[in-house]
Amino acid sequence: MSDPAEGLNTEQLGAYFALMEVSSLLRYAVEEHLRADGDLSYVQFQILARLVDAPEGRLRMTDLADGVVYSRSGLTYQAGLLDKRGLITRSPSPDDERSVLVTVTDAGRDLVARVLPGHVDRVQRLLFEPMVGEDVATLSGVLARVRDHMRGVPQRSARPRPGVNRAG
Image (cartoon, rainbow, N blue to C red):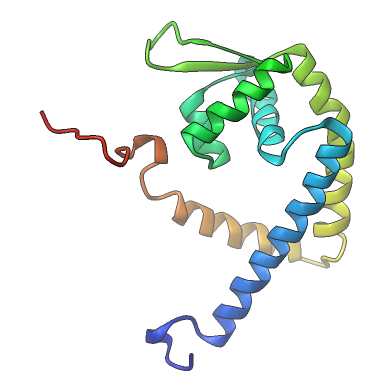
């Protein structure tokens, strides 16, 4: 892979593999904790955490799917599991009959509060502890630029669904 036109150069490939490995290792450690302390998957924790931070603890399902970068059907399934546990409620939006509102319950807030300290501890120990000097600011700046670039394409909820004929 010496010709960049053919693929990634050695430095790019190394950065890509390091990012993927760090992401996988961190996610595994965080998920292990969430399962043990809260019987939650990583995406379920993301759903609850986003709702806890949302105004009135409520978001539209499509906004939630875009925020956690998860498929609509996958999010519907995960929301169903959380709903059965009494951690969220789902209801039709009063403003748009096609939208579903997801709201965190007091039990959902309590669960987030219970698992959050262990979550923060793992992130601190695994991700931030080995960093020095301006590493956090540098990493944050680089990842924000890349995230913004990747989010520059239309949100997944705004894209046409495969196999759906939008004509006439």
